[in-house]
Length: 409
Image (cartoon, rainbow, N blue to C red; front, side):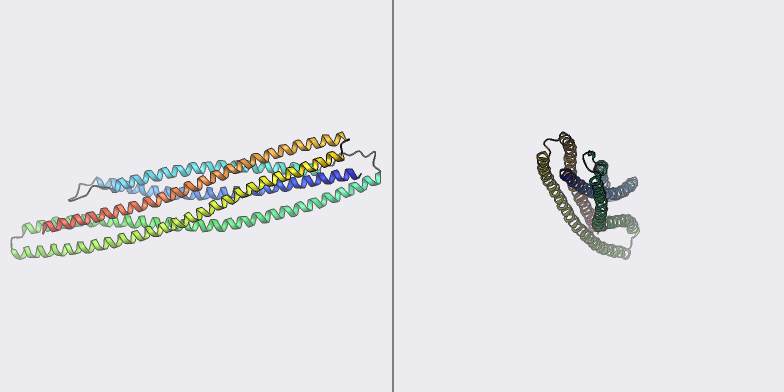
């Protein structure tokens, strides 16, 4: 009777340890799934922003092509805006394709994690069924009173075990909700910073486009005024009218100088906006580093899971030796233990496979984080180079116009 009780207690302890290990594994898989969902949402949002930006650039390219169909103007410099906009459009298409591929990979990882969670749930249900199924014990050699007492005790243990499982499930749910709240705050903070950075970049691009449009209108008006002034100067024969024309030209040169100063001030404002966007990029890079540290911590947790698995194997070996020493002459116990050992080895192999899948997932997340950071830096650098090129082109055009006025005078 005591040997049967010891065997039941050992089996119950093994089942409890199996249950705890499987529940811990399910918790980790749920956390990994939430991280993958968060990453997928960020990539979808970035893809949408890049798509909007791409549409805007395509519209600008179309406008530039339509403007190039107009007859050339006097002293018109070669159009570099169309080339820059086409380069930006091709770069954004490449980034969009890369983000789409990364999003597809994350979807595949998400499906794989969901399958692993389903498998773990099946394993947990199988352990519950094994624990709840009554053991086949010979009742002919045991008195009826002892058998009733044993059954009552096992029923009490089963009810206590079910209560403990309810408590454990409640704790798991609380931990899951707490982790979701923590990740929600981080997600909100990261989304807000990204939205602010994207808004500043869109404002800078809009400011540059408005400035470029104003400059084109100013050039068109200036050419028209030059033609009118040239015709008026050719028609003037009197010296008084010639002096008035020179005075108007001098006034126009002064106005051009003031416009040049205003354009320089607007360019400085655009440079300050780009510097602010660069600082926001640095903040985002710091947040990426924090995410990388979090991934390293998850890798450390995986190593700890390896160590706990080895400890569990050692404890199982010790318990097997104890059971062999207690039941060397019982063939049924040996057969039952062999079946348990085979089931444990199968469960261990599944856990090893899941650990390998998790390690591969951590590596893929690290590569995806690095790729996202590189794409963000390249986008900021491209926007800054575009603004600087436009500023230099505007200054060159202003200098050419001032030289032309000086030659006319």
